[in-house]
Amino acid sequence: MKLLLAALAMTTALTLPGSAMARPVTLTATLSNYGGDGAYLALYVTDPQGEYAGTLWIAGGKSKYYEHLSGWYRASGGNRAEIDGITGASVGAGRTLEISLDLADVLFDAGYTLHVDAAVEDMRDSPNEVAVPLTSAGAQTPVRGRRYVSTVTYSF
Image (cartoon, rainbow, N blue to C red; front, side, top):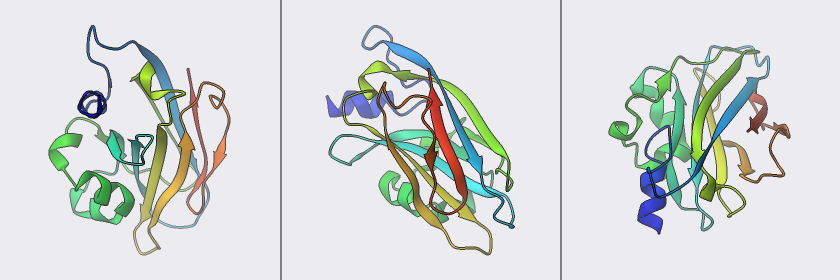
């Protein structure tokens, strides 16, 4: 089962045809006005045991800075091949990142957690900036970040 879930999390679709149902989900991260350069963000999922299950999105185009997303980097082993095609520009202070993707139904109400790591040039890194359990009841509920992220929400 763990290999199946790891495979599910390896793409932005997070689905295997015929094996799992999926639902469209919009993830929204609004950054605070922290007064620095654009933030690099890693959005990833861990399983009920806290083990890395996969990456959903990386905001920030220069891979040499990915190691500053230290929670994600440690969990994923910094595997850049895994994130091909799921990266975008960094997110500026006060701006919002919104991504839409399909997530496997098995990730909800089953102990999985969405994590957001953040890093800003010349400022402190913020591993595990946000950690929110993926539950049906938690959809559309804003979760406050610790340093650079004002709120994170997910909606169906």
